[in-house]
Amino acid sequence: MLNFTFKNQTEILFGKGQLSEVSSRLPKQAKVLFLYGGGSIKKNGIYDKVTTALAGAEVIEFQGVEPNPEFETLMKAVNVARENDVNFILAVGGGSVIDGAKFVAAAVNFAGDPWDILVKGAAFENPLPIGAVLTLPATGSESNGNSVVNRKETSQKRAFSSETVQPVFAVLDPEFTYSLPPRQVSNGVVDAFVHVIEQYLTYPVNAPLQDRFAEGILQTLVQEGPKALATPEDYDVRANVMWSATMALNGLIGKGVPQDWGTHMIGHELTALHGLDHAVTLAIVLPSLMFVQRDKKQEKILQLGERVFGIQEDDKEKAIDLTIKAVQDFFETMQVKTRLSDHNIEKSAIDGLIENLERNGLTALGEHGDIDLAKAREILTLAA
Ligand code: NZQ
Ligand code: ZN
Image 1: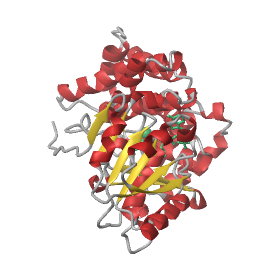
Image 2 (image 1 turned 180 degrees about the vertical axis):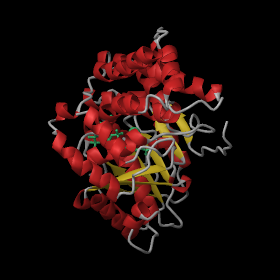
Image 3 (image 1 turned 90 degrees about the vertical axis):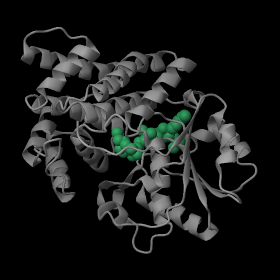
Image 4 (image 1 turned 180 degrees about the horizontal axis):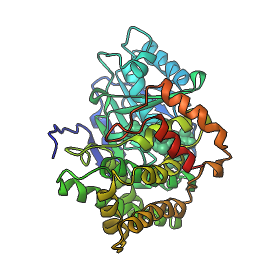
């Protein structure tokens, strides 16, 4: 096992009615920037519930953080936060709103161009504290320090990570996910699944506990994910999916083990250049990445196949093929298509994707740093 430090500062408020706990977690004389997305919370009643929960605080609203949160929009929110001198951000939504809140929190007291936080890893001071009310279990953003921001103007999707912008609390009420459209239910399950894979499907370092944490989450998602589509108002199913997605990327399962993240990095370019949903990009890239990296990942692919998908096959190469197919079939069961052509993206688009990887310095991906541009091209070509 590799050395590690582990701390997760986010207080999880899990279950029905937990939103009522929020007021006691706000700073004294709270001046809250209430940040949300395109308005789904107004249709499903969450907006009213949050307004009630914030009754004792001064509240400034900012609506309109889009999926794949846009730098320009977030800069408007930064200005609102500065003008109103807010001392807390409450993000209500999915990963995009929560990631957006982290960027705003970091940018508010940053003297230079906040884009540098994303592209140059510029250090920032005195970020605002954040709380999250999660409405879409997927990214784990509610209890990690990661933030991914899109910039259409430059066709870039860039990330930064700092525990200083990690939410201090996160409300996880499974009922808040009942209103999710099937597409977002699917996206959430696939994203969480791939988060686990990025931290599990590498090479063995004799870390059986991390392996079993990971396999437990994967099995739960495989079992409960399709149920969330079939019976959307089943509280227990929603609760299990929600907790799985949080546990998939709150830092725990990746401690002491190598991590990959190649699928995510290649996937981000598909969103930046073609606007695909984040999870859709992962479903396209992962099976092909597994195929191309099958020798390096052999032991863990075999373990995944046997322990998560119940594959019993003595011939190793066959077992690997069956495991890749099982992953692909799971995505298709979740109604997420796994090929570029399913989204009318032609093979000729691969050049642009490779150029973007190069421009963003993403030329040595994966747990061995061996996914160079040639391998990335091979992966995308296989996924065509
Ligand atoms: O904008 P609103 O109206 O809120 O609607 C959203 C949005 O249209 C809707 N939605 C959310 N909750 C709902 C709902 N609709 C009905 N009922 C509800 N309860 O769903 C749509 C998608 O929301 P979004 O927040 O974009 O989805 P997701 O949570 O999948 O977040 C994706 C973003 O997170 C980043 C991705 O790159 C992408 O930008 N990621 C963040 C990570 C992190 N912070 O650790 C890691 C991930 O790998 C990922 O990169
Ligand atoms: Zn993801």
